[in-house]
Image (cartoon, rainbow, N blue to C red; front, top):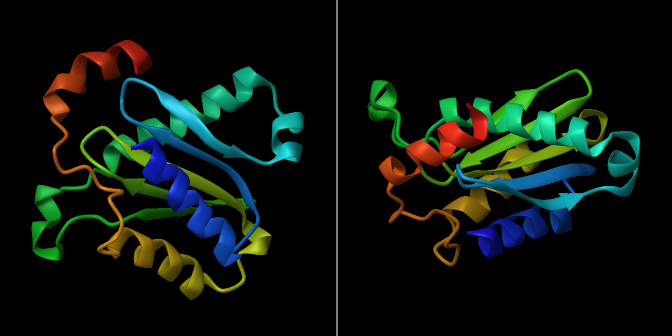
Length: 148
């Protein structure tokens, strides 16, 4: 999964849709930092970055790939959270996994291009970003241990 997360983050970076702050890939048991901009890493402690990451992951658990209450719309491709200073994309990859990427809000000038680049990558037949073989039940215990 992390190779695909790396490729997704690289696609976003090369498209120049905004100044990327930080990107993480998570699978319920753990998360890995895929990218962090130097000034962001210097401005916050490891504990602060960890807390923000875990909180975003917990929010991401609410935005699952399959949402029965919205099944008539199809699966969820991504959610975008617009904070005053930061824009965060969360792409669910399975029940307990996904990629979260943050950008400086003032750098995202073309919101259509911003979302199109992400969706084009997700929907690309060459992309294996979504792991359809994942068994979410096996991760329930690990999620509880990590975030409980």
